[in-house]
Image 1 (cartoon, rainbow, N blue to C red):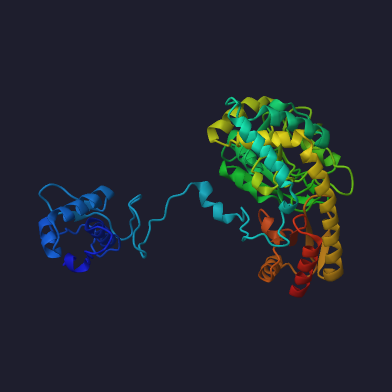
Image 2 (cartoon, rainbow, N blue to C red):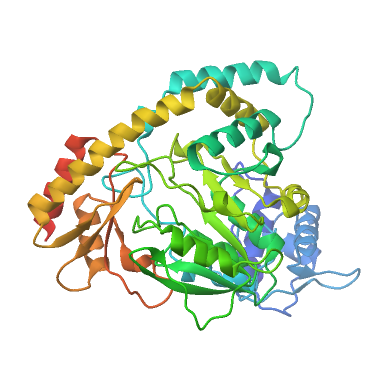
Length: 476
């Protein structure tokens, strides 16, 4: 008897209709009222429960609208859901209900197969890679730029998606600091560097197109290109970064970090760069150059960008402000080959990869007034000293365990394990001890070729680095 399964509380703040609806829904969803079973008539159930007939009628109508009941005039309502089904939008159902496994796209089905985005825990702990020191950012200066941008917003016309002042400031900065050759019109402002990769993939990649990436390399690149159906091939590294496999025909797209390979920090020689440029053909093979931390070079003058030596418009140049400024600024940029500017701008708006005009205007002022370069120079000196401090500490306390590769720039370094290949087990021990690092093998596209630890130094003061190194030494 269904009435015996229902317990209505007259004094409850929740009305009788809501209680009855909720309890009947739970009985159907959990299989207590099986699919195809007829419920009592509204008159009969009302008598059994001691409530008005309208209370039962309203509950039946709600469940019929949600798809739990099939009701027709003159007939008893019938349950239409079994315990393995779920009605979308029907509200909360009791725990214990089995949900139908959703059918995902091929891309979404592969998301769990990649270790990206990096699943770190908050808060930030030493020596997590990939971060600058937000504590050293000139927040008061930046706040003034934001405030002036906000005050001017009411007077500004709607304007372009990619703000002219910021594009002009970036074109001048990239030409002088990185040797990038581009007009302001070639620069697209985006919410992140990852958004730039997704935009490129959406415009250029047809399912089954071949894409080359570095192996080990930046996992977000492979994720973006796979999302468009590309066949992603990992290219092994040598001391100059990505190597070309002579047997392979030129792909649709090549992704690389030639100025500071992620994660090893290796620098690609001019001869190697020229070799890859020789593979590319406008309209057929494109190169994506990610200069993710190109602002930070310590031991020599920075090598000009690959884009700057491309005379035929074959190279996309990707950059971000999250390393040089602060990670929560959420702005990146993309320098686009001239032949694709209009197409990329249309795609940007269609996909919705649009950065805040308020932030863009503030950043344009921050750059134009010299604050960006001043902050960059200061952080370059600071990070240089922190790199050297970490290297010295690792060599002194862990020299028998780790072989440190000293990068010429960047905000992180690789320390290889001298004995064994259990870098992921080592990372687990370190995280449990309070030191965050990343296994080099986890950045491999296929079977790992390299094993070691990826250690960040930029976000940590020297005293914090020393304490982290001592903790590391106690774990080995």
